Length: 90
Image 1 (cartoon, rainbow, N blue to C red):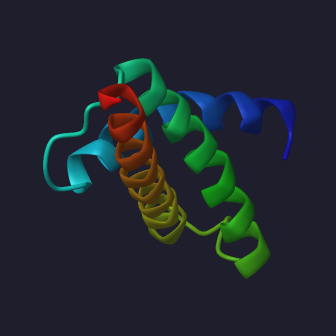
Image 2: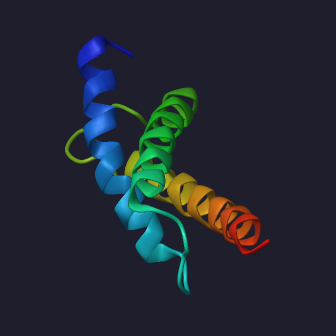
């Protein structure tokens, strides 16, 4: 991954985090900065997994890579919302 690809992943990650939060049903009691951080990590992980699968560089929009990123973001938001919400209640 080049430097420009890394910065692009961060910018896309901000959007991915918001999409991941929309995909998870129910209310998530986590701050928006944490959602965006999860999105950045999910974008980087999704790009790495897409590269490992050989679907990271296709003609047009990389739909498989985008779907992987959103899935990682949804899993991350759901996991953090479950632990963050319980931690704050006690």
